[in-house]
Image (cartoon, rainbow, N blue to C red; front, side, top):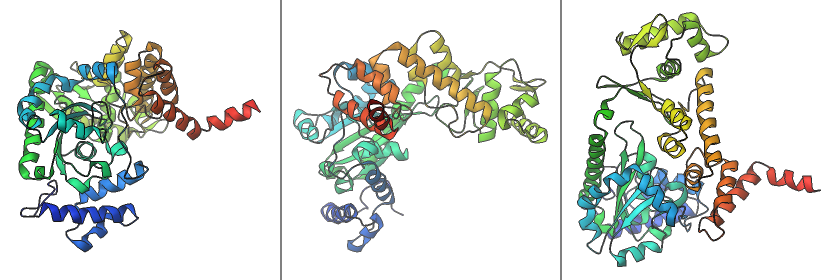
Length: 432
């Protein structure tokens, strides 16, 4: 069975495949389904067809250009603080030869698809500039369409994107291979490593190379964590299933057990079954159901970690959401934002978890606004959880110099949000 993450099957003619996919792309742009592409040859790869659908919803058309969101001092300060800056020497050691051969680029992006580093010879860099493939540009699917780093982030898997498989016509002269990189302690997505060049990259070796580079980066980060990598901890931010590390073992808990564990962590002094039931179900808990869930959780974790009278954790276990709150209490806003991987158990509707989620988010957001720090506000508004936050967008705009490259995009985003929330209409009525 062909590898679905490779762009070309063994023995395929790259020129012919480019022509077939190009025709499929034009038909898709005109309104056909990607699956219809099989009429003139092999059908579209599912990963590409699905990415085209997402891109068509997010972008105005196939001629859209990736926006530049970070530049100058903002870019320098952001990437200096980013965890992937620590593994940049590994990227250069393993992929630097490609970046120096005059035919390829090496690129590193963050978890939002923002390019942090793009390296290669000046000639290849000039070619990439024509499609805004430059440091600071946003190359996730929602802003640049189907492309290797952006789609690797979207599907969380190494892959290749070949020539006309790119949704944006500006990118169709390039072929790229990319692999996502994760935080070894929490599993959180940190970004991706990418190699971009000509259609000769559509081979198994380039995909294996970026995957090996991503694994090497994760191994290095795991070593840098040292004892922290095996510390007793819970990761519950930005994920629906909590990840518990204890005594060198890891558990990925189900939804209900994740909620119970978060509630136990929020009350280290201990909770009764009724209190936990209220946190899980609100005013109408079922004592029998709560006891059964607690018994199953205790069997999973073991009596050395959890006791029942009252229900509490025996050991000191660090939780990522408590780390964020503690950093905020000490005024370390930038570090708190770096530690924030997203809302607490975002899919949970348990009342106790919802209250905790709002508490963490409100404290972080208030601290960001009070800090009046352009870099942290910029990071927040360009994150998935801050992208629709009108107040922080407006606070960020007030701190931008009038000549900042990001200012037109920022003001346009504010106009769109005000219109979406009906504020423009309300203001107009108020004037009348």
